[in-house]
Every structure is written in C-alpha cells, then in structure tokens.
Amino acid sequence: MRPQYYSISGTPHQRGKQWGQLIQDSVRSLIAQDNHHYFSNAVLNKKRETEWRRYQYVINTFLPETGDFLKGIVEGAECDDKSIITLQCRRELSVPSDDCSLFAAINSGDGYIAQTIDLAKYNEPYGCILHESDTDKRPLSIMFTLTGLAGYAGINCYGLGVGINMVRSCDWQTGIPPYLLVRHLLSLKTINECICALKKLPRASSRCLTLLQGNTLVTAEMTATRLRYWNHEKTMHTNHYIHPDFRVEDALLKTLSTDERFQRLGYLTSNASKLSKQEILQVLSDHSGIKGSLCCHGLQPMDTHTVAGIMLVPGQGKLAAIKGNPCKSNQFYEFTL
Image 1 (cartoon, helix red, strand yellow):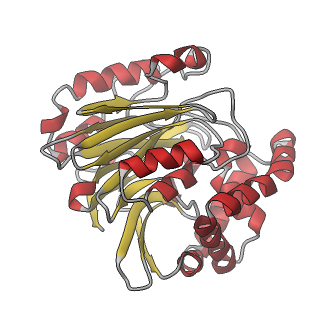
Image 2 (tube, rainbow, N blue to C red):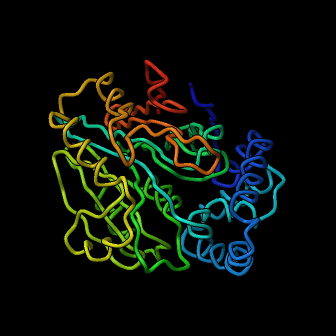
C-alpha cells in the first residue's frame, strides 16, 4: 500500500501547525489507540502523568526547534501538550517491543539503508511520509513516520540517511527520545556532527542508529548513557547489541527472534552491495523463521507486526516505502526529496 504523503514548509512552528491541521483526525485516533492499549494500565498512566512534563522540559531546553515543531502540532491538531509529548515518548513511557530488521551497504558512494518497521499491529494505518521544506521552499528532509510522531527514519538535503532499531538496556532516563534524536540528526550536515550530537545530548533510552552519507556507513549503538560507533562497508542489525562492550547488558533483555532474524539477514544479504531494489524488497518480505521472521504478521492489535518496509537512498535524495507487510506489495513507492 502507498503511504499517505504530507508536504509542509516554513519555520519549525509553521511546519508543525500545517502538519497538525492535515493529520488532525489521524493523530487523535493514534493517541486514542495508545491511551487504550497502554495508558489504560494504571501503572503506565501514573508514569505518564508523573513524567511527561519532564520530557517536555528536556526537549524544549536541548532541541528548541523540535519543541517549536511540537507546539505547532498541538495547535494545528487542536490536541493538548500531554498527548503530543507522550506520542514522542511512547516507548519510554510504556513498554519496549521488537523494532525492525535492517541492512545497509555502500555501493560506489551511492549506498542504501533498508529496513522493516515492526510495531504493535494497531499502528499500521498511521504510517506516512513527511516531507519538510524551509521558508523558501527548499527541501530539508523526508522521512517515514507515524502521524504526529516528529521523527522515525529518513534522509536529508545533505545526503544523510538515518535508520533505527530497538535494542534494550537498563539505564533508561528522562531525556531526548530516540525518535526526536533522529529528527535532530536529519537537520545536521555530516555524520561527524551526528556523532557529536549523540555524545552531547541527554538520551532517554537505548537504540541502534545506522548512519549513511556518501562512502561512510556507521553503526551507532547506544544505551541511555553509553555510546559505541564504528564504520562498515555493509551492515545488518535486528534487536540486540553487536558491540562487545554491550553484550553483557544485552544478554537478559534481547527478544526471542532477534538472533534468528540476524542470521537470516546474513544469509540473504551476503551480496548486499549488489542487490537490486526488487531483491531488497524480497529480503524485507522473507517469512523464514521459527521464533519470528523479517516480515512478521501480527494477528491481534498488540502483536508485533511489520507495519512498513522502507529503503533510504540518501545519495539520490530518494526514500522508497511500503505501508503494511512488504510481502503484500510487488513494488516500493518512491518519494523524492
């Protein structure tokens, strides 16, 4: 299925307000779904009520442009601050789950990042493409995300691409949620600037980010308080740490299917730099596995489900995406920065 496409321009606040107006019904629906599936739980609701303002303060303090963007969404969608801030911190304020299988490769300076986006099944209808331009209509970034969620995975006008996977650690804290870290990284010019930002900003939780620009491909694994990064010509990632410094941290927290999916990716992407777009789609559509597959099909609203498959080609300014299970489509839908 082709994702809904939104194009917005202006200052951060203007862009947020435009998007909020365009997605008013959809973002309210997603917030209602989160409230039903997570925050009807008394413990999680108490955690949200106690902590959401702290997250808002950190976001506004360290990423003021992102804070302005979120204020715009609040105004445009006619929602309250708590709902929009909670949406950005939905993982940190609820429970972590499986998130994505990813592989990437450099190919003569024109590499790609390809990944599934695995979330609770009820998220699937809200997947969309967000294209942002400045006040002079010059393109800034294009990403795949959910309605109202200000960051997920995408590319920017400097030829930088960012993909994301869940990994788990025990040091989560009030800080910048990784979805908004990705948004901030897509405002920067180089991978070196991205690494500096990851070191300096207070991070809320653990993730693996894959960064691609020209002939540079970097894996950045992080807990909330520690960061390790290294270069590759090709890479793959599921939902466990690869760096040896984090293996003890990971041992009791990784999900049941992550090793199996990682091994399957290794088999399917041994020639990653030479895969065609159609072959990349076939990898994302793979169903092999006993504990879980790359393309996973949840049955119930809270089951882990592949809500999208995406391919980032930052050197060409292109993002390709499928909304829903990749196996149900015979093509990517392409969007240009």
